[in-house]
Length: 227
Figure (tube, rainbow, N blue to C red):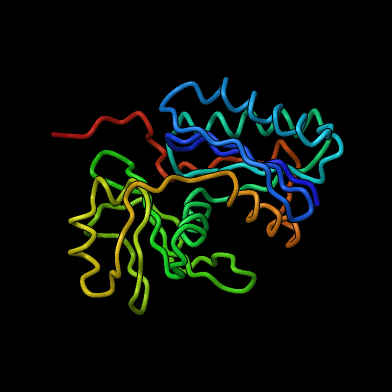
């Protein structure tokens, strides 16, 4: 299985190439310039592997939620690259990829990934590690205010992502004793996105490039908060 994955929905820009179990990664934290950076990362990985895009089985991308501009970049780049290579695309939740990275980094198995959505809201979900050491969704990706986020059952949940940096105190109060800890600095990476992309491909979730669509959750992305 050969799959190229990209992720640009947060401050981290990354690409990963999955080659029959081995993963090559390019990762850089930079607030801007993802559109130029990601193309170079993709080329570097393919050249390192001596692989042409048309020899890939599929491509994957972080479909959101996250930065509107970042999600749009990933969608446009992957649609163009996959169409040119003639390969299908797997769309992966950026919250799922964040949860998967948290498991890889910390070993925690009950995860609450969150991104700051501004306007007093956050992108939120709950994932639990299951079969194959991959995360399964427990609470669907949602856009909500801190006091209204959907709570998972049980205890021992671990918060990850910049949403915890912006709303950590409020989330801790909302969750109470079911919260085990948090890492507000962890960012998404294409490495884990590639793993989820491979799993999605094996489950038959790959689509034609033009059907690979972003998920913003917020329709009015340019709306200003009211006083």
